[in-house]
Length: 409
Image (cartoon, rainbow, N blue to C red; front, side):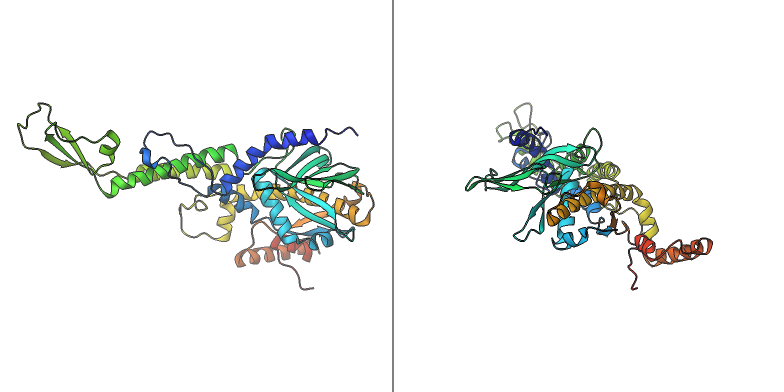
């Protein structure tokens, strides 16, 4: 097979790395929102206002995706994941894929030949994707960087070998017993146009969040006027010291000199009408509504309480779009985890199994929404009626998939 080479993949990663880092900055609430410089005083233009909506959009799905196990696991893939801290590994891979559109699982062998699994974020790995199997034909990953972000240890993956490049000790070549490179992508919402998927933090999310952050900043500035209304005085002598325009705008006293230059009348004092915070609140609520529509969240999720506490069914109905997103993510991530487990089994057994050997192995997930007591009662009544019509149609395993509750048998 003709490979593009590590140089091509290095350049590819350097192009994509900035976009991924930007989304991590939005997730961590460290993004820099540009200021228009129109309504902000010069001394306050460096003031930062942040909102955690992008983090909420990611965590709202990531926290609901709980991987349970592989069914019909003839190659003991469950055992491989359990030996590699599966709880942390699954959550880390899912979170990275939702933020960056994809993350990667790097497979290597320990001293005894047992596979080790390590999650690599999308800003440190890339490759050439096979659209049929959703696995890589060749891959590249940065395993270690120095404090300046310069790669110190790199890995190049092919179907024949894994080459580790260390700036200190040189290159080492490890034979690959699997039929595919030992770097597996975990992709969120891939399609023919974007084979490496799409980030949960879309361009629309970043644009709306930037506008909302500026609204919060303007509201903080306006709160100073709201808390201490500005006063005015007219009829002063032109010899009176006049403040610059921003000092005058921000000062508690706004002065206007007499046009004639003579004090023909006594100075007149007054007070401007107190500002209202309502326009800022309305604008922030508008941006929250746009963000909720973009991400499948509700206004309650973004901190705007709109109704009394709802029942489990009402919450589930209001999050129908979010549920569909989560079910789609389960299908995407389940394929990636199965691919990684399949290649790990090849490393463990030192044998190149065919991909179709695991076609019966299926990923199992916990329910996206855990049912409450009322919902469990409805499920029980429905299960009894269905089993009366079709005996043994719903068994303990099916009910566990619906309720998430395991049987003691």
